[in-house]
Structure formats: C-alpha cells, structure tokens
Length: 311
Length: 311
Image (cartoon, rainbow over all chains, first blue to last red; front, side):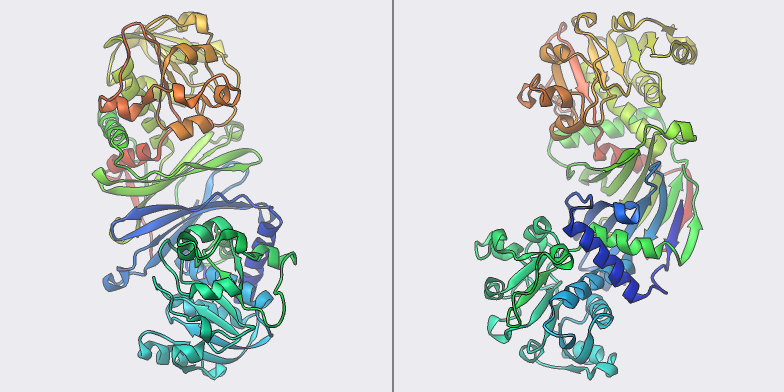
C-alpha cells in the first residue's frame, strides 16, 4: 500500500477530461456501481463518503471529502479529500491518494464535458460567477474543450474578479457586473450561495450554465424560473435532489425531478441532447464517486509514493 | 496526518469492551450519526464503506473493509480494513489506521457486551461453532466479562477444533460434535455458512447465542425455528435485515423485522432485557461503524505512527 501525493502536478487536463467523460458514458450505460454519497454533519462542516467501482477501468475505491467553510480563516482549504483504492481481486488497499486538488480537477472536468456537449458553439464567451479554486478549475478544463474568445468575471468582491481576470490575459478577460457576465454562451456559477444570485431575465436564449456551487442541502445559485424554462441535466438524479442546484426548488415544490432532461451520462452516450440552438441548458453538478476513480486511474501513474506497511 | 499500524498489540480487551459498550449505549440513546453501511460487489469479494460520528468520544471517520473468501489461498486475510479519522473542527484527515486486527477485536467486543447482558449466568459453558480469527476474538473478549468454566469447540475440520481447544487449557477446552457444543450457556457461531448448521432441537432453554458469521446477504447459520422462539437482538435493524443472521429468513418470509426484541444498544441502556431464565436469546451481529470509532479512540494512543504530508 502506498500513500500518493502531488499526483496532480503533471496531469494533462485533456486526458482528465477524457477519463471523466468515459466514466460518465459508463454511468449513462449503467455500467458502474455507485451507492448514494453519504453525509455526516459536524458542528463546523460535514464530510461525505463516496464509494464506487468502475469496471471499464478496473478500479474501485472510496473518496472521503469534507466541506468546512470556516477553514480558510485557519489557513486550510474548505474542501480536502483522500481517495482509497482497493485491489479488485483481493480487496487489499493498494493506494491512498491525497485527493484535494484531484477533486478540483475532476469537478472542472465534469463541467468541461457538459460544456463540450451542451454549449451552443465551439467558440464561446465564458462568464464566471465566483472566483475560487473551482472557478479556476472550470476555466482550465473548459479551455481544453472549447475556444474561449472572451472571459467575463464577477465576484461579490470586485478585487477578486479583477485578480482572477488578470490571470487569463489570453482570453480577453475582464471583471464585469453580474448581469453582464450572464450575457455569455457558457455561464459557470461556483459560489457558496444559499439564495439565487442569477436572475432569469439575465439569461439569453441558447446559454449553457454549469451550476457547480450548490453541493449541499440548502444551497442554490439560480432563480428557479431558469430551471423551469431550461433543459436541466444532472450528474445523478438522487444526489441532485438531495444536494444539487435543484435541491431547494424541489423541496419548495418549485421544481420536480420528473422535469429533468436527463443525466450528463445520457448526453455523453448520445441518448439526450440540447433541444435546439435557443434552448437554455443547465448542468447541475454534485460530483460523482466515479469521477474520483477516473482521475485516480491517471493520478496513480505519477507523483510521490510513500510505501506503508499493510496488512 | 499519520498512518497508524500495530495499534492493537497492547490494547486491553476490557477497555475495548467498555468503549464498545459505551458506543452501543450512545446508539441506544440515538446519540450517534451512522448512515447505512454501503456495499460494492467485486467478482471475487466485496467491500463495505462505514462512516460514522460518535459525539460522546469526539471522533468521526470511515472504515473501509473488504471480504474476499479466496484470500487465504493467496496468503492474505479474508477481511482487511482501514479506518480514516477526521478532525471534527476542520475535516482534515488526522489518522489512517490499519484496522484489520482492530476489526476482529471490536467484533469480539460486541459479542462480549451481548454475552455480558444476555448470558443466563456469570459462569458459563461456552460453545464455539467455528474456529477462525473471529472465534478467537470472541473467546478472548467474552473471557473479560464472564467466567468461562468450560469451552467446547466444533469445526467442520476436526483438526481445527482440536488445535483451537489446545490454545485454551485454562478453560477445560475440548473439541466436541456440534450437537454437544450447542449444549452450553453461550453459543458463538462464526462460520461462513450459507445454510443453517445449528438445529433448533440442539438449543436448550436459557441459551444465549452470538450469531456472528452471517455478515452478508445469503449467509445464515441458525435454523430459523430458533429465531422464531428466541428473543432476537440486533446491532442495527436495517443492517441485520440486509446482511445479518435474519437476512435469509426475512427474505423467505420465515421471520419479520417486527419480531425483533430490540437492539443491543437498548439492552445496554436497560430499555430491553432477557425475558426470563428460560428464554433463548440471540445477538445478530453485523458490525457497526461506531464500534470501529470506539476502538479507534483507544488505538490512536499507541502503536507505530508514520507521518504523511497532507494537505
């Protein structure tokens, strides 16, 4: 058994996107084992346990990931993760991966796969609401799939938007008011908001939205009226109802699971698609354990390995 | 974050029993968080993911444990485990425990707690059906709670029964036919059987049975007629229905969850008890994540620690 760290440093984003895309295809075809993510609530945060088995890659394991919003004030990331990989034939744990940055990358990759299939064009104006680590992961992952002609950035803190935009001079990046950011081809929301911050009348026909921020009960970023007129695709219906962008509207009776257009897996295998050029499409991302296995299959090939005595 | 191994070597069985007993008391009082154990099925075995939070001990984490019956032929244990412990305030993984032998010990401790509360006497004749690692753990744990006047041992392989008995000269231990072993005060079954091996007419009034072997769908050791006349206590009703001794009878309509006498937690807090001297009592053990946290809280204080870079 090895402890594996710094495995993300040389990962190629395009390869990560392909591995995650293949995992979604397996999911769409019903070829994975993935019990529901389970939550433990602590006083200052929570942690989630995510087991899965991805037969096509011959990999099985469990990710354990926390969300503690107060961590940055202690000098720690809000989200940290470990992934334990088991040998299929014997059940021996063969690797424990430091999966904090891998989690960022695989969530970015899911957004990139959604944008690849659902964006109205291959050359896009990309709007970002939120400028944290996941915002960066989304831009980098989407850039491996689509041509970003322009990048518009909004943050509650204008200085954060300016700083984020300054990191992407190649994409004509600039900070902008939120309603201007929403005037784009692909909008990515990565805030921790618990009230809708994206108004329905700001979203033009044909826009694709990656709704990434809502990852726990009570969180939401989009006006429910957007969901009502959009084709909403989820990674996993049960997880989305529990903790995705649709969780609050579903609980309030403003949206129903039966209105969902399908899963990203179904989009990847061609069973579902964007209705037409003018449809608004939403990808409601909660994060699947199979994404963690897909990126682990690449990460295991590099980085630092520390051998540990087991059994 | 540390990797912790060999933490079991100096563990005091009495302290382990008390920690596990306290965890069952918390469970009986509804003071734990413990989502259902989830199973992933592999071609040659399975693995289970067991998250929990035990507020009374201030400990939270996840055990990952496999069951691969073919492992001994490869020189590996059938069951191996890791437990990841998270800091409550920040969610940082603080320790990864090699939990293979801890799993044996905590399962033994649950049996000992059940026998302490449900055995008809404090001085007992102990019957063992099965002679594997868990049989040894049960004898050692029960010996810390009750006086073992005599130990009778059965195994499908008579040489195994002789060898097991030879390890306990202090308890007047001897191998015996299975029906003779069943003539005892406390019977412990630890076999991997998928058909009942303990017949109803072998079990005297007043016997307590620890049914340990059935830990997955399809496994059973006791004639369902024993369950029908006994007070059956479980560690957790949902887990027992899914994978405990009652799982096959429940699926066949021979036993119903509503017939359960209660949980071991309810017994420990005095809410439920042995009906009278002549009752047959059964403890159907499936193994709870809170047992793993209880023993981890002791194990973390000793053994070898290997520091690992995180985050």
